[in-house]
Image 1 (cartoon, helix red, strand yellow):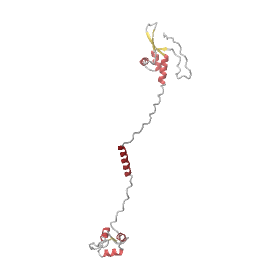
Image 2 (cartoon, rainbow, N blue to C red):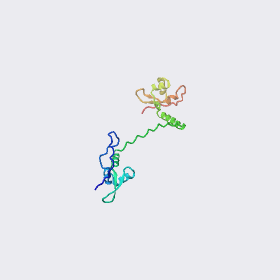
Image 3 (cartoon, rainbow, N blue to C red):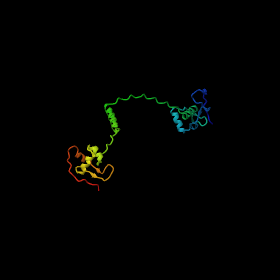
Length: 200
């Protein structure tokens, strides 16, 4: 035989109240039923009692003369609602912006050194200068030393200017070296008279 303790009925909550409407139920229930409603173990129900979330009363059964624990159905339904509808956590307060500490002299020097290094790495290298030709035609030799081609040809035939005979080619058959032209620049004629070689 189940015995319920009668208590005053609580006032009904309005539709605008934040408290969830509770379904009609006996005001006091046993531990197993409380655990079933909360979907927890009976031991967890006792832990909720110890933490003050659920009220508990002890009544003596007049039939079995045993002390029986009864639990508040309203508290059980409130805890069940809170477990399925946890309150939203408030957003953390925004931290005020921190003032940036002024840069030290060492940091400024480091920044300047990095900027200089970047500028050096982006410098465009100078264009490659054309390499001087090893052998010049008589027309090129005339521009190089300033002597007419006829005079250069006479010096080659006389053995005063070393030249290479390449045969009939574009630009003439003779090729001379810039260093040999430097030897006869102006009046410093210090070349050793040699026989004109022929291309073999």
